[in-house]
Image (cartoon, rainbow, N blue to C red; front, side, top):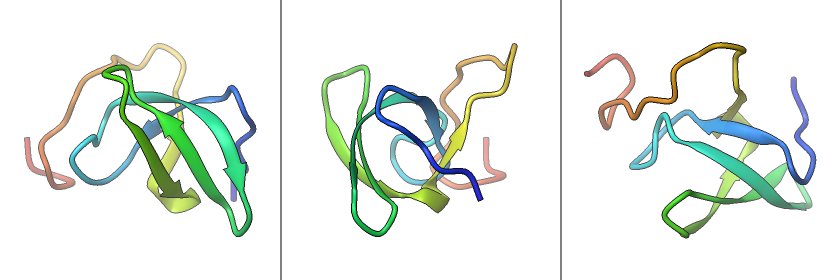
Length: 69
């Protein structure tokens, strides 16, 4: 299980912003992370909804559901 710190760049795994790279701006109790999207939205995600960015991975936005382009 990966824990994220303030300033980490991560990728959103699920939902409307799936596939977008975001920066963790605040860590809250119970592994809830406040993140800021490039368009300025502030979102809250649990740890399972985020993943570390892979080296050399393209920064693309996926479809609304996993496995659906």
